[in-house]
Length: 254
Length: 254
Image (cartoon, rainbow over all chains, first blue to last red; front, side, top):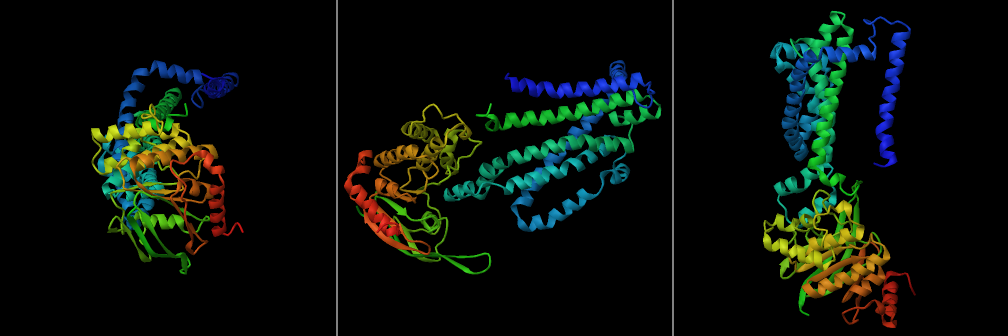
């Protein structure tokens, strides 16, 4: 590792350490109530002591987020292909897409709950709803941003429409699709938590609410930290998939 | 040399965004002998790239006819190979898969095609780079790959649009010798667009000099220097005289 790489790995950690230290000092030295603001060490202790509970409540949230995200990919990409391939359909569908996106998700969560119940389905639906938009928009943008030279080359070779799509447009759109997917996967976690807040019997969001109402602040904060870790890990998984599926993007620069 | 291609009264107008007409090519007529290397030389924006696209069947001329090998060209032909100013390589494909792209489109990417791709890569000095991605190659190497791709399906007509325009002077001279070598081996007829006078004279059997837009044939120069061309020829009196004649036709010399 070069000195710069070390610095890039170390400095963020150093920044976090400073914040945690100030936080710890502030709560301890000024005697802040543990209910109002637990110290980092309280949160760490809660994470360790309630490990079983936290882990048990993590799985429903992960499942909701991942399934919602997967559904968003499975429906979003084909829809983007349709939008990008026909101007008429694009004109017809785009405003509807934007309109659905501008509806606050928290506001429709109660309706979703009525439709799908308190179980995992309603959270999955909300995760899907928030993850869906960036995937459609970025994929459609990528499909329309194919370098003109490549299209011309394919035309000169008398490639069929299907060949142009499969061999040129789609691979050229992959970087766009992945940047949409990275945004979408973190949003999916937020969608799942919104669902859990509005009504649920399990999940980290549910645990956070319950702990809060019972004034177990350290546990509520621990749930919050675990939620962030889930988001970061899911993001990292998509980034890893990108590295594996697009080896050319890192070749020659590393 | 028997006649291979005829360009008769080719005329091209475009509709501008304000609705007016833009006259790109007034009248261009010339013959392309079989096996010849003919260069279209002209100032930037004179319509030579437009003309090449018409010859390639990528653009339909407003008026006039293009006839290659007994066929009126109104769409891209299977026995044409094309190389552009930008290498237009696909960053997600390795070198060998870029070269094989035309064969894939033709559904002929079998063993024989692979062997020929390796042969071509050896011919341009890229043995050992088959698995590299274009992003790992220099500009000159990328153009060599593009040249292999243009030749993979043994085209009868090779259309080249300033393929060495973006390269430095030394690489450009190397590529010119390489092109002449390959052309000697394949016997392909070549239509080559450039704005470099010395490149036009060095490469060609004949140079068709385009006037400023709207283009007409300002001069048709039979080069007459023997092949194989040698770099020393660039400094001969005959070569300089031909350059001078082309310069006069372009209106930059007395």
